[in-house]
Image (cartoon, rainbow, N blue to C red):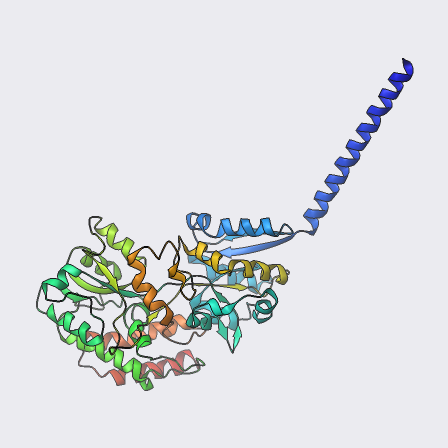
Length: 433
């Protein structure tokens, strides 16, 4: 009996020893895993609501597939995003990888805040041929890929089918000539045919003239971004002169200097405006102003009218890019995350609740393909681009263009060539010099 108890006691002690050893082993393994795990900091300026349906599920899936990498999302308010990143990176710190607004790629690249991506693209097997070419070009500096496109948008023509029908037009204008004719039909009435705004630094270069400039093959800056060449660009001259002609018809909204995008949306929702350019967010703004409106009956979208019949429609594009920051201690892990997020199916999932995937044929997927609202965007995206070569002082160039063009649109008797020549001189001597 005593022997049995002794055996039992020894067995119990032995069992406890195994269990204790196992616990020590597991604890050591957990500690080792924790110590050897790579932690990436991912920067984004989006709100929690957007992150939770876009980036977060994808990042969690990435971590499941890569258990040796932990990704911490660093959420920075948009209003402070660039300032915070600049301060941190200059101090030798900052995130490993994150979003960069397309207009800031050259600013960050020129400041050496970004790692060139060509090696990572090759090593990770990222297929860059899937991207819309113009958007891929935005991320290049001196022929080197510094960022890759993550999201995009575009501008299309919003029009009121009922108002156009009342003037004898059974379809949206497809060419500049038709656009001028439809606008003229509303001259002298209490309904504006076409809406113009100049209420922000990007209003004219992006929301008003930019789509027509791109469609006409014009450019404000040289290909390498070293000089303003607007006065020498036939496409730029043609687009501004076309807009002047629209103003002369009396059918555009008055007071271009004082009219905002919000004003146009309200006018459009109240049947006081027949046509305007807008982005994918414009539908929400219209319906917020008048929830009773029905797409296809009360408002519709069409590609940006082309200069001549048979030409391809173009538009401006914006959106976010993704880059790897120069201070990262984990470039290989960051490249793996970049490659994962750049997979076409992941870009589609990411943009389903945000914008458009920057992919050739990207809108052929749900939730865009079954919604007729997006057909016009699908038509213009292949030819979309930025209205001028990205440079470090991108916003200042855009603002200068707006200041130069507003007077000749407010008073269409002014010389377009002289206004563009003044723009070129100002940019070349005060911004790019």
